[in-house]
Image (cartoon, rainbow, N blue to C red):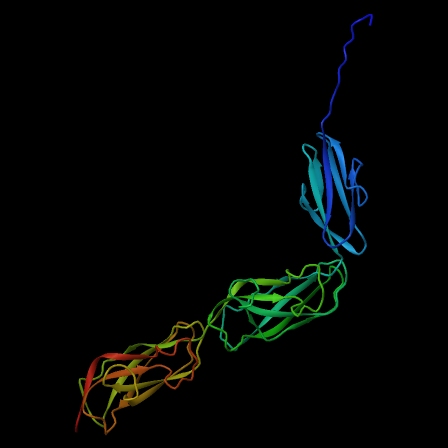
Amino acid sequence: MGANYSIMANFTRVYGLTVTRAGVGSGSVSSSPAGISCGADCSESYNTGTTVTLTATATVDSIFMGWSGACAGAACTVTMTADKTAVATFAPNQPDLVETSVSDPPAAAAPGSAFSVTDSVLNQGGVSVASTTTRYYLSLDAAKDGADRLLSGTRGVPTLAASATSSGSRTVTIPSATPLGTYFLLACADDLSQRAERNETNNCRASATTIQVTRPDLLETSVSAPPATVVRGTSFSVTDTVLNQGGLASGASTTRHYLSANSVKDGNDRLVGSRSIPALAVAATSTGTVSVTVPSNMALGPYYLIACADNTTTVTESNETNNCLASDTTVRVTAP
């Protein structure tokens, strides 16, 4: 060598990008810049800092579900700063029925009662679906499970093209054995599993508000004190107040009045009179005065006066054990 030479070498770091196809559907993935054409070629090396856009294309009988791994969602663009793997998921192009809306139930209803439901079913899949059946439930937690109460009343949903919707209303009935409590209303599309769907876990929708399954509850809040003494076969006046403290209005009922040796209603108490109670709205009361008569064969002695709401059990109540109230003082029954 007759002279001195200087040699410089430049090195560029490269990273590998790998595409994986997942799911039971079919499709391909291409890249820009070129290099990946997956199926055939699913990996490529790119210079550090290169921005690569991946495009997933489903076959005619499939649908692209989205990206995972190095990407998320429907689009995938990665910058090569390390080795990366992107996963494209494909699914069969099937129907997919979802409830997009369900009406709110009434605030309160009794077991065995009926109300109207309106709901909408959308076929968000890529192909048409034949007719199906929507069913309705009461659910404690807004998620369908084995503890939910199936309501009587279903809605037939007609054939739906892709992106088509069916809306309709049905009257549903709460089973008479439903426990009292607070429930969400569920509408569940294709609840008989009549059609194969792309997603079999998204058929149900819960109402925004809840329904209280409850009943009326009638109780005596006051009863007047009887006179200090009363002669057998004679009468005296009784004033009492009945309250509906339940969650639903009650029908008309009957309050009865008794004389009791021990202030607790039992089979030994003697009936002395009654009062008719009108229908009562929630939180409403009825106060009235009637004349009651001591039986002429009543045993002599002291007795409490007891007033018992709905004593003919005309009204089905949430609590059937709180209807009676005894006076604070007693009346002594004497002989003529």
